[in-house]
Length: 171
Image (cartoon, rainbow, N blue to C red; front, top):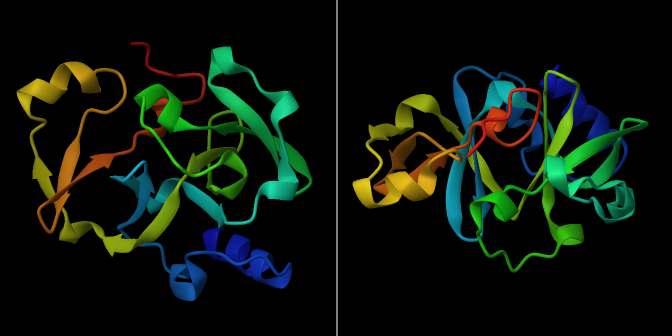
């Protein structure tokens, strides 16, 4: 499970952002950043967080048509890497090799989501639902359908199926 994955990383000398606080998943959200924008993700979707990916990437295994920018060596297997900043047209100053990979479960196996940084874990009850402002609805179409507030900061609810997998939502 999730805690085992984090322990295996610690044994390999790779620092994980989430540390030991993940032994109980519960109803928690992972907060991450892309180009300064805040996103949240159900922790139940997350397998592991890997902060040192430089030596594990192979950009030659990309398939831009599928949104795959590289492949990542993860547990002796190559998994697809998706950078949502490209679909969202978000400018990131973090180079690909310096990003953090959030490993997610998918219908076809694990895949990696590139993010600028992982902030923290928060209990789901810290967030308030919020309607997407009408001016943003057109821009959001296809990439996200929910926003929640955390201390008055809008956080985009990251929906993995909109970015990778057999059920990718078309724009």
